[in-house]
Image 1 (cartoon, one colour):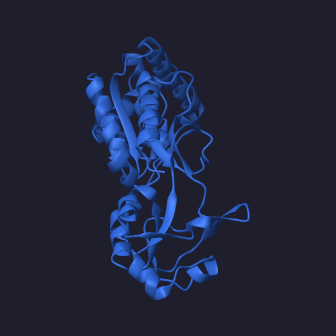
Image 2 (image 1 turned 60 degrees about the vertical axis):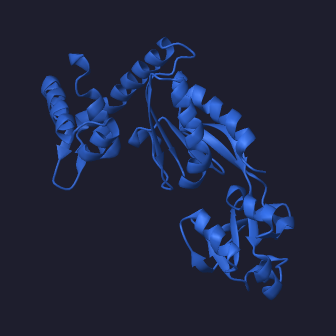
Image 3 (image 1 turned 90 degrees about the vertical axis):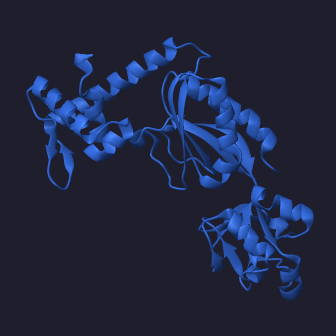
Amino acid sequence: MRDWDGIEEFVAVATTGSFQRAAAMLRLSTSHVSRAVQRLEARIGLPLLLRTTRKVSLTETGRHVLDPFRRLIHDRDEALAAASGPNIASGELRVTCSVGIGERFIAPVVRGFALEHPQLQITLDLSNRLVDLVAEGYDLAIRTGNLSDSSLVGTRIGSRRLLCCAAPAYLAERSSPETLAELSTHDCLVGTAQAWHFFIDGKDVAWQPRPRWRCNSGSAVADAAIAGLGICQLPAFYVEDALARGDLLKVLDPIRREDEPIWAVHPQRRHVPAKVRLLTERLRQELSRSLPH
């Protein structure tokens, strides 16, 4: 594999802008990445990267070879994916998802998938950060709402319903709001979402709450609502049990936003690896049954 030596490392450094981030993306040591790029530069006879203590940038030669090297890696990966067979999931699979839906729904499905495919090594990263799949080396991401990145391919695997709720005692004292104008006079309990969403006069409306209570845990926000601190807007899976018990009541349901799509997204490629395709289909099947509506 001497002819490949350094190509993947160089592309990773050029993509991430850092030897350290490239090493993390490739799951190698920084010193390995640095030496591999140096060997590649020695074979070419010209520098590909300009290194300073503050940043890494491409030389003219580096800019010239970057796209051809990317195509080489892309074609190699697609050839390997096509050769591995349509139903054999093997190798390393890296998946990223937000914490709330990941813990409750995605992790159990991925765990079962791992048991059925012993040749897989799976990393499931639960984070509310928007991950760059290509730059950070992820195979699949679970995302909600509208997809804006045209470089990604999305498969709808489920839906998420947002509900506004409050405790009966709170509503008995403060009354139940019927409009956004009335909602603005209430105590709002806010999670990770910066805006609350409603459907009014045929349009999606984003409304900015002024939080009395803010927490990056949906469960903690739901608990605060049950305790009577105010009104929350959360995905249904956080509040469905409390609603069934009567510990919470829905508010503003006539202007509830339409259900948000949940997507499994992956980078564009001609041949989708079996591990990505099979897990996407498993998620679609399982989430259609397990997510509350």
